[in-house]
Image 1 (cartoon, rainbow, N blue to C red):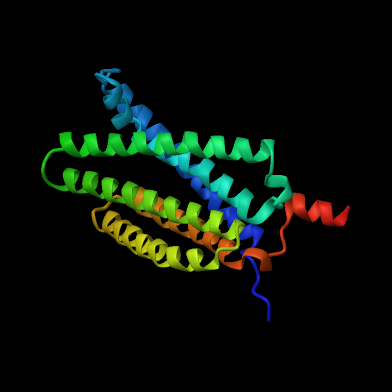
Image 2: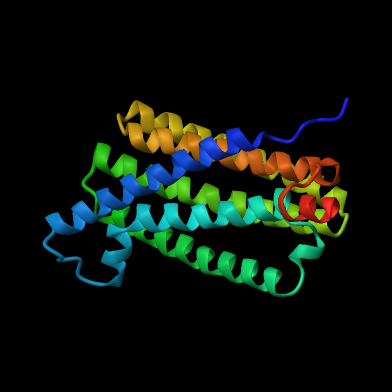
Length: 217
């Protein structure tokens, strides 16, 4: 019996909840800036203040790019200008993710010892593990494009190890009472697990969207 791809309704619900979380993080960061009366000092201070917002917005765009590539657009639709646009968006998002990581590192540096510093360290571990996830996913998507199944199989354990780290961080957030961070972390794990399912199914997945329209045309 053929495996079914993740349902569009499930994906829509998870992605929508992540967008709501992005709004809360942006509001939270803006309130922090307002409370500091705009005294952020330098660019590193700006990255520290808006680390969560930059991180979340960048990952939302990356999530959309991966979803388009692995479930919606046909190989032909991923050529030419579309490919350049998607790659350009991803490169810009990777820069923002690295800037956010620098912000998390600076936040850990200036945090007071105790719960505040533990949470700041968890943010650093979380951001670093997500970079491992995206490197592994990028590798899987490119290997899938070129039919290199051995490479896909090689990268999968690395991806799952990173997910285990992320799950541990999510549980730690919950135990520390940072419930929004715990909820958000679990949503992101679920969202990228769905992307991983897209990659696993690969050619067995009936593509929707552009490819489906072309087949029906």
